[in-house]
Image (cartoon, rainbow, N blue to C red; front, side, top):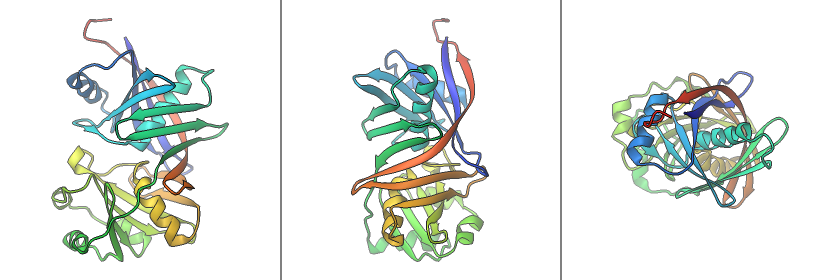
Length: 264
């Protein structure tokens, strides 16, 4: 039997967060088995971890495909490790081919260190906002396409056309964002190319958005709300010129027993 931990990540007073499953393996198994287990668990993302020198190797799977640098899957993995090993040191390091993520546990929250991505700009990016029927005040790209709108309500009320969003295939995801008051921003995150039409709460999106809004608002700590159906809440800090910190809450939902193919 294998235990799969189901956790809700990026929760808050009015935010239910984003569920993820976490499975700890003794060693890596073939891709098709990982994908099958992910499908069986039926969560937006399943994180698989294997113990490695001074930390854990990690891979993330949506229901249909392996994905890269998943923030909520990383935070769920660290929280599950702390559940599995109550006397674990308060820091977990997660290694992947997409970068290293460090998670620190404190008495009331988790702090996750992730890369901060600098934006790239070209005149052709604006056409994507036009195609989606959006009046953008700025458009840039990182791993993702980011469309900046003037008002929070424009982000909240946007009715996505997933066929059109899917046609924007040069980027991992399409993000809508807008300033929220003097010390924060909102976002929505669409990634139909990896089987997630709209994500509920997205840690990796802050790798694109944090550096941009730090500069725009001249602040090093921001309040962030994801305007999905369940809602997500984050605090984002500028840790260095090329890293950010997410401060967030995680709630253990359940532990599911999986039966391995050999029946054990």
